[in-house]
Amino acid sequence: MSSKRVYIKTYGCQMNVYDSARMADSLAPLGYSQCESAEGADLILLNTCHIREKASEKVFSELGRLRALQNAAAEEGRRLLIGVAGCVAQAEGEEIVRRAPQVDLVVGPQTYHRLPGLVTRALAGEDRKALVDTEFPTESKFDFLPEESASPGAAAFLSVQEGCDKFCAFCVVPYTRGAEVSRPVVDILAEAERLVKAGVIEITLLGQNVNAYHGEGPDGREWGLGRLLRRLAEFEGLERLRYTTSHPRDVDAELIAAHRDEAKLMPFLHLPVQSGSDRILDAMNRRHDAAFYHRVVEQLREARPDLALSSDFIVGFPGESDRDFGDTLRLVTEVGYAQAYSFKYSARPGTPAAGAAQSVPEAVKSERLAMLQQLLNEQQQAFNRKSVGQRVPVLLERAAKHPGQLVGRSPWMQSVVVEAPARLLGHLVDVDVLEAHPNSLIGRVVTLSEGNDMNVVEPPQSAAGAATRAMA
Ligand code: SAH
Ligand code: SF4
Ligand code: F3S
Image (cartoon, rainbow, N blue to C red; front, side, top):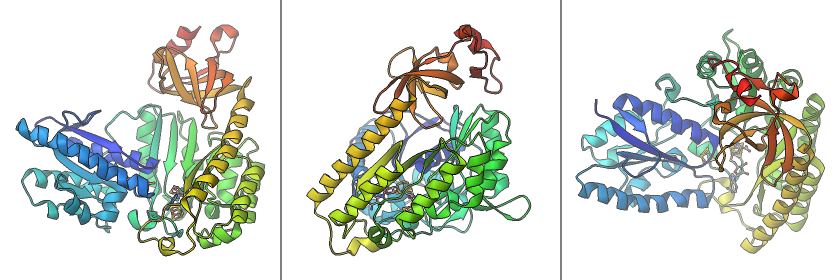
């Protein structure tokens, strides 16, 4: 088997990050190893996002750049294959092959277990038009993918649910990812066990609508997300659990109870609300009003008083008046967020809202976005400032920009930068927070010399004590 290189460029959400890793796994049996840049690759895959117009346009400009690379490879007598995967692949399908002659194959989010076959057929010279696979197959790709091969690091994603049946009026996801499907509990537990054995300390369960999870349990009954989280919390060595993205409508009593009872379930929740106006929430088909969202937040905070929240917002949805936007600002003020994402509404072809009248002028959207972001930034900074002087557990995940520094996450998803030797990577350490910046915290690892011998939680299979001694 010859050795070849695949470069995968990932756009969009965490689900795509997870899928990219699994696509790499699926190609390993063909002799492909993953490389970090497009130069010198034998296969380039763009794992794309269709959520807003800008996101999908990026793909076509990137394809333009890749064409030059493909031509240069051809001049050297090498064949460079280019594939488009993900949500743009699903939405545009054959149109991509028509528009972009450099694309050799197109594969959707539910068919990427067939990627090795497509690559083999492309190399054998099959016509590109036959190499578009955007079916929603009856089989589950998870039953055909090989086990994860790459080393996962300290924090890993695990897909438990895919697709969406909610059909919010603005959103392409139900069309690009298809109907909601939950993976069986035993499959998830097996994957989690492999991750923990490989040294993973934190698992984030993924789904477009993760708390709509209702997979088949080992008892033959349906398990909800709360039950699944409780089971995962029993894993020794696994110290942190998170899940994303959740829908307010699917926060049930079991999930709230898990937040109350499971210390491993981190006190941070991304719970998108999109708007604070009942009129707009209704037009968006979100299926709840602002009062309902407040009640859900209240129940969660009762269960877990230190819970921090994050959200997504859309400004300038068709028909959004100044008053509606004012309701959004009010909701933000009332709830109080630790962080949030906000976007200008982007009309997406094929979605119910795309043809709506009463579109909001671009300038008004920009103005509202700036106002909302200012408020959200103030809240984020206030939240970060409250951490100064606190001692927080941080999972050190990667090297920081400056040599000698590592970055990790607090339980509340804040990035925390510390001076620490590289051997502390993958460890959970106690950190005294010294400074708060808009997007990160600066801290100092609590050392043994201060009499704290609990500050490093060893991942399994590591040289026990080495890191703690080194810090003393
Ligand atoms: N499943 C998640 C969201 C997935 S999409 C949920 O239900 O909340 C991520 C975010 O992109 C959404 O929360 C929304 O804020 C934003 N988004 C989706 N479609 C959009 C559009 N057409 N224009 C602008 N923002 C959009
Ligand atoms: Fe899109 Fe709404 Fe489904 Fe979220 S719940 S993925 S916003 S349709
Ligand atoms: Fe984008 Fe698809 Fe994720 S549209 S946000 S990559 S589900």
